[in-house]
Length: 620
Image 1 (cartoon, rainbow, N blue to C red):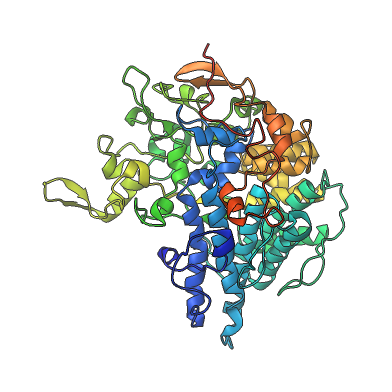
Image 2 (tube, rainbow, N blue to C red):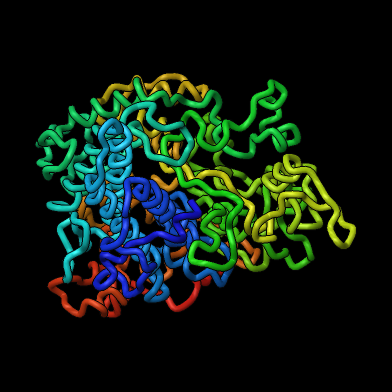
């Protein structure tokens, strides 16, 4: 992954960005087949570049934009509030997201169009795997781009044309995305890579094909309940591995193959998916002590259920173009709100083990807690009811949109034997693990320290290495049930949680997705595809988002109620269809509305599109 900081391509820089990334270019690189592996590392590394600004990542933005989460954080965290209210607080709110999307596309194209410049005789499987991964990543970056902005500049060549105009997401880009995932599925082989090594797999490509297809048919084609729909086959562009139009039955076959033949399997206990069940923490955390007593601990990064993820390591730094992209900052952002309650108590101390402090952003909306039955074990496994589970928890004087419900899946995790008075030593359980593995030494001041130091010297902010899971096998299984109307796979997911089987219905599959993936960033685009494009203020997405109005929160430590910052969630959703603002700087650079124009619902002429400061709530 470190190579990602070195190799890049500037084939789209003139139009899509104004910076030259490195001196390497398509005229002098790659010079050998081996160079393509370096390019592939650089391609995956774009996800680490994305991670340097969590509030511009697909996973965190989509999470906050959903009805299940609040932007929250402190009273000055205007960016997170703006995203959660579907508005903007500054023109460059999504500049890095745009930039990284096109860096990823450029790097993927560079591999795809250079792969056959070299002789692969006797290494055809290696060539196909590498090419399949490049197709996968190109499809992924375009999917993220389309879900963020809709009609965007798009090209499928070694270099971007100049100008590179917006293309229709519905008619042009989405069929290309589906083709990329088909190509990846056909080129790669099951077992060609080791699970958890950071590479895309055939099973992951099949899973993302299902996700892209459901979004295309649901949002753009307004197919409604997919189990009952009979959509026309999608005509795909010609490229390697694509054999013709893609039907609903084809997608089901790909999902079945991923379920049956990829080697992935569900983790035994739902709690074992999340890092709070790790072997250092679990024995002292009552919620999972029963697992620890049986010798069962966190399944770990790259486990049997993780089909694709962003990976992190002890290489984060406060300087450089990758900066903090090698630490999972979503954990830091989702930690217990720091600062104090006015009486000196700060969240995240030893008495609140195993949940560490952070920025308190992305808190769980009270509706999710209230809507979810206590009889579902996944509820307590996913949501921290902080005032109930942590008696010493406080609502701080700087908090905003905090109902006391936190996302257990993404929170920083501590352990009983952490060094609580020295965050730079081993505050998180990761720091304790590193301390245990590496042993100790004595520094120049006579202090006992870890032999393996924390790279950026700050465990509290920089030592978070849990994968950001982008696709789990459970998702593939629920997509299969949603497409077929057969409850078998849905009930297998429920059985893992200890729940009785239920019949298939559209309402049941929607609820299962909400509960199974609560806090994982999938809900917003699920709502969009269940609503269809141009759904208006009465569509499912708009109605669910509007339910945030009046929900209980705390503001500056005092009970309050949520209210929209400018108009209403339903109105903002209807105005934008859930699309983000295209960075105005890109429109200024282009200076041609026939090439690039702003999305509906955004811009200085839209009265409710912008906020100057954080929403202020009337406390009770």
